[in-house]
Image (cartoon, rainbow, N blue to C red; front, side, top):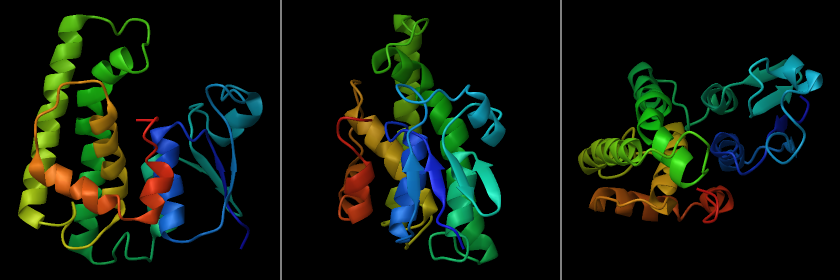
Length: 206
């Protein structure tokens, strides 16, 4: 089996999902910088790996694989991070899918305007609405953590906690007004005890 290679810059939250997963599993890998500030993803070479021109991409002996959550599931298959039980796995998938659809949609405008300073994302009303939606989504996550008392999918740490742990980190380190969600704060403190968390949840990179 060849050592997989991850293509993507570490400032990308989606790249860090994959790297955190690999480190949780103590799997060896190589990484190349691609994306903003590095080799451009519209390079014909990169487009052969991912026609969407987005990072991350994982390349192993079976070829390239893209979409960060799919890569995480791929490398974690057969491990406790992605359990085999039908119901347990569905809960992990449920929260991973929620992260990349509902939660990401909520924060996208505010983050683009306040952190990335992207052109066209400077409407104060839309930023405010995005912040409200973001806090509402995080409140839903807080309620889930109140129910489990531990991790997103239940008693044990799983892939869902990697993708949502990074999302909680982004929420905490973005320049917005936040609701006080005690269960989320306790959850973040638990995640901070994991060595791979401190490696990839960089304070300066929400």
